[in-house]
Length: 117
Image 1 (cartoon, one colour):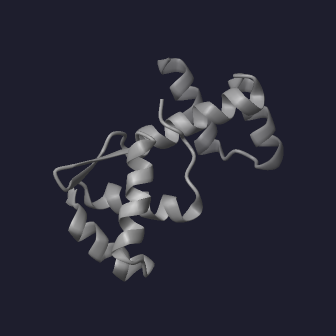
Image 2 (image 1 turned 30 degrees about the vertical axis):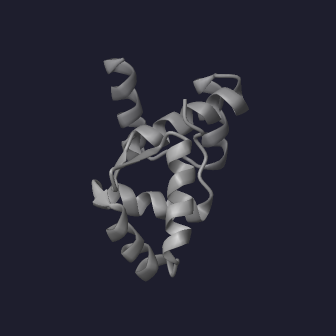
Image 3 (image 1 turned 90 degrees about the vertical axis):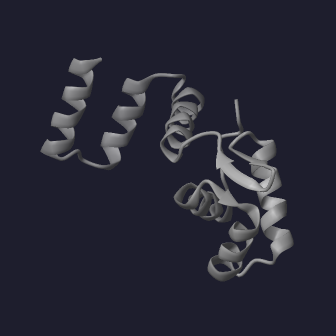
């Protein structure tokens, strides 16, 4: 299982990859130079770290995601529920709704998800 945490700058970098994938690593370096003001070596170092963590793959100079953005953040959410709420989704929802009220639309969507499960 990949390490499911991204620092803020890693998240911006990952978003670039997810929005352009598959992408040549050289093209990725050019985009990162423009959008993140990174040198080519910085792009390759961060890319290597995220590949080592099992989030992306750089094979023959082509960068592809091993997880979609949705899969990554879903797995990250599962980890948070496991670690912070002992795996209890109801405890997570209770904590969440104490700080932020759900809209009627959100409640309806949650009910639909439960009914479909």
